[in-house]
Length: 274
Image (cartoon, rainbow, N blue to C red; front, side, top):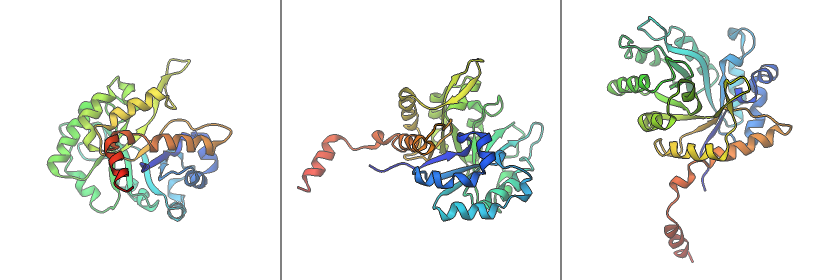
């Protein structure tokens, strides 16, 4: 059985721990746990971003054979502005310096006046592929703006994909199933997290139960086969490697049953080689 590619969003290890140790320190653990892609988090860098040795980080990632995605807390569209966020350009440059093949941002305040075509100019000078994620905000966490955005992207034939965050839809009381049915064909990266309410009745990300994994498999029916998926929920425990490996294995096999040939075909194939 082939394993589907799994990423780790480094925030899964806890913001304080990652800032204390540095994002590069988690590379060996990810490799040993069977991870395919590291998701760097811009908000977890400490100190001045301009002083970060991003090329050294890129080499550390590349030397271990990991893919790299750069995640930035940036809204593609700012409220009241029709051109893309001016911070997109320097963020693309930082992503490239890290050796990232993808940049993940939020949608922001898309409106009818938003100049989507202007994105082409912003992206033309970079090899980094843009992915737009549903976040937890009213402007970027509802289904309708994404339908509008990708319809406009399609019309302009622009190569922009979607990061589909399963749990984030809950913050705006949106149906993940409805979102998958309407947006699944655009998904190039899947953020996986279960959601529950804590003692203060706030929504928080939690590791999945079996029922969550079953739901996620249903969502995958609407997405490209083998779409890369990421752990975006807490990874904690005395044996952090074993905790991470267990979750990576669970996500790597997610959706395999949807693409297995019928048992009769498997049996006939085996008999043909006897």
